[in-house]
Structures are given as C-alpha cells and as structure tokens.
Length: 238
Image (cartoon, rainbow, N blue to C red):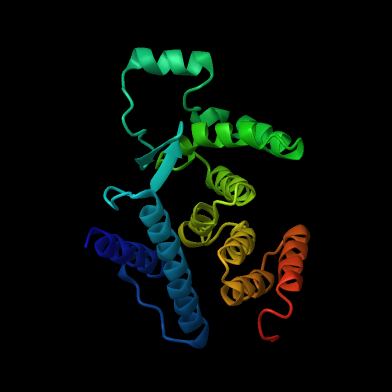
C-alpha cells in the first residue's frame, strides 16, 4: 500500500511539473505526446524503484532508497548511523564521510579519473560518499551537478551489473530533471539496464527514444546505436 501511494505521488509530481500553478494547456498533439512520454517515463522509474526495493527488502517509506557506506537508507540518511557534530567532523577529516556540496565538482572529476583508470572500487566509494549530498534537496546544489552525479552513479552500477540500481539512477534524470541536457544519456543508460535485465524490446525502445531526443551528444548517440546493433535479431526492426 505504501508503494502504491508513493507511485501516485511520483505521477502527481510529474503532473505538477507539466501544469505549473494550475494552468491547463490546450490539448494539442505536442501536449498529448508530452503527457504520453511522461506517463511512460514515470512507469519505468516506478518499476526500477520497485525492483530495487523488492530486491533489497526495503519499505517504500520516506522517499528513495540510497546506499551509503554499504548500507541502505532513505533520502540520504545512513541506516543505523550515529549523528552529531563531532562525528561529522571526524568523518570528513578521515575522508570516509559525506562530501559537502562545494566538493561535488572536484569529486566528480575524481570519479571520472577512477573510471578511466579502471578503479571501480574507488569510483563506487566516492559515489557512495556523495549520494547523500547530490540526492538532497539543498538549493545550493546546481541541477547540472545533480544530473552529472546521477549519470556517474548509473554508469558505475552498470559496470557492477546492478541493473535495477542503474536504471533507477538514470531514470531520476529523465523524470526529475526533464529539462536537463543529460536526459538523452539517461534514456540510453536505462536502455542498457533493461538490456542487462533481459528485456531487449524495452531496451531497444529506450535506445530509439534517446536518439530521437532533441539534445543528443554525439558520443551518447553512438552508444545508443551500439546498443541497437547488439540487439539486432533479438527485436523486430523498425
């Protein structure tokens, strides 16, 4: 029941984004298409969230599941952790606590460098430390930084073959940041997550949607094309 209520909340949040301040747009084809795409994206987002919760045995209360320090928590709080100013200072000093908002851009560069060097353990550790910050609602965190970290998170989860977590991280960009220039990449990574879950038709659909997005980076387009090439023969051609 809690999951159903949370799902309805997601759809209501998307509706509020489409219809700000109670303004109802005229029902034209572009508007209808926008609603249709929004419903599909919400469905994918809710599906991945449900898969993560079901796999990890998490109750859907309080927000989205996040992983920090090897434990799951809700909305950036570490499950079973102690709080207090002295502990926060010790954690930051020892380098094993959460990053601060101002540290996010530099830490993202460290994650990219770690991925380039093949050090997935270091990249994972950095993302786990930062997740409680970039998934918070602090107004001081730039939207582009949040999208950047969610994409990095999805890429790491794909390398670790945690496909449900990868799809959830990528779909957060598509659903919660629909105006971000990283939406196409989010769709592509979600397609790869579905591919890993053995859902080739859904994966191909997302790869095509990625390529049809207005703002598509050439590298992301090539990645989506490569995804479609891998699925050739597994899904009907369109």
